[in-house]
Every structure is written in C-alpha cells, then in structure tokens.
Length: 68
Image (cartoon, rainbow, N blue to C red; front, side):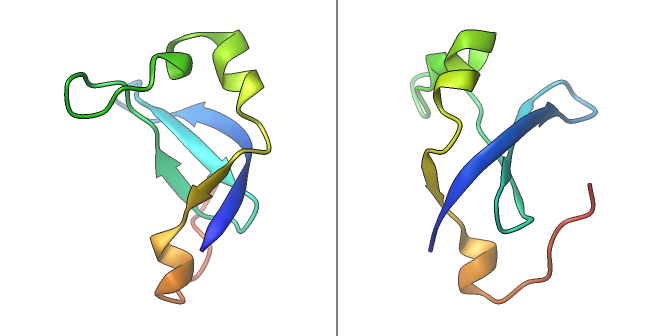
C-alpha cells in the first residue's frame, strides 16, 4: 500500500528514516549499487520527497503504527 512521506529522522546509526502518514517508519538509505537514493543525502532532496508515496509493507500486513 502506498503511503506519503510526511517527515524524516535519523536512527541511532544516523541512517535516514522516512516517516509515513500511516504512522510507520521506513529506512531510505543511499547504498549504491543496491539502492540508489542520492536525494536522501541532502536537506533539499529530502524536502523534495515530502508527499511522495512509498510502498508500506507494514500496512499490507496490518501492523500497528511504529513508536515515534
């Protein structure tokens, strides 16, 4: 299920995590060559993705919202 990004934060290892409208969180790492998300490395790049939909597998499984 697609859910829009409403914000970002960093986890304890300083990896970027997207906060989704559904209350779930999803890592959005830039780890070439497996995952290419250079936009996550800049403030402007992250701000430009607000509202963009990400596939939320937690919603598909009916999981409760993540803790903030």
